[in-house]
Length: 495
Image (tube, rainbow, N blue to C red):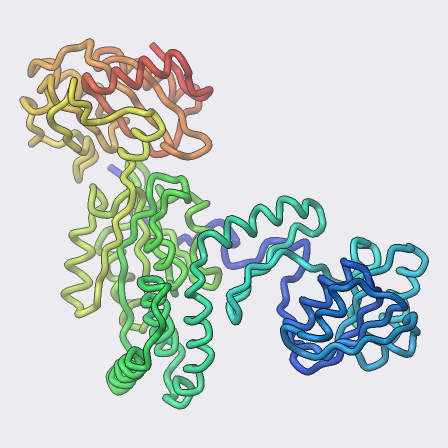
């Protein structure tokens, strides 16, 4: 039987709260009404002039000759003010500038421009000459005041533009109005004197509404409603909440949008061993991430200790995410945690996830309910409280030739389970698959039959197969086995 360990004994082995190295520090420079200097009159200079003017800069442009686009900007700037000086730049022109850009072809002149700017303490960029630049321009998605900048540190501008196009496609145009509303509403929220958690809750509700109706204009009635709700909460005791969130089988791209939103709003994330590290990276960087280690056959935290920790943190006003592999409502002990939160008067929300069975089936390319082979799908656990095979399994149902069966936590007890199912009438030649670490880069598959899988499974473990394991068996699984023989996964083995 697995030994116990306490939730506080171990936290994430990753420095998940520490920022990874950055090629560039992303900053958003306030230029409204500030002086900027631009040297050059080319098309490249025109594009930089448009960016600076859109940011509200008072732009001094130095060039003997300019392209037509610059003259058009002078007549009708998108913002700010443009003054064109029909001469070459001089070092004294840089004094007092907030920012300096040189659209300069000649390397020697570019170096001189950069040196003059730095001598005046002015951040400088020389277009397409990284060696002379203190900062770089990236690709931009503009929903101002919501602005997204993308940088590849000059390594692959075309790649950066492709990423910009992807982001452009998924950010609704209506977010511009919501971001502007947030800017206008902020003073009214500030005077409420809300606590840190109260402010977060206000803006989370605002954000949830924006995500639900991105192309609707935010109404004054919504502002009044959110402010009233925040005021009521302020007069009551500070309370937190619990969310049971499905982490999916491992691939972070299989997280639901709501799961991502919950993770990015969390103060504390309590996670199991079965949660993939890449999923944890999605959580808010400042959130405390604690391993509460529910896993089979190894030292595990007592469920009562997890419940107590979860409730205790929520009573401190924390937003607690209880992160579980797969779907929290499928063999995730969610019932006990929901009951503990409700008994303590803590609001609890459940966010379903892609189950491990669904993830494995998707990677195998198999329908678990293929109408030629299965009329029923059943999930069972092969691991009881004492670590042994459950004594109350329905062997007749497991022997049903028209069912697809998914077995959770099967490694230690599969041989016994298969023997009893065959004794109840399950044919030994029924296709069976074991899948380790489904949807993860290290995914490993073992294809066999009900009668031969135990031996193949033991061999795979000896050869290094590891990670959460599922076993799927039934006639429908034969479709996957046939496909794997034609196009096998490089981590698969067969018998």
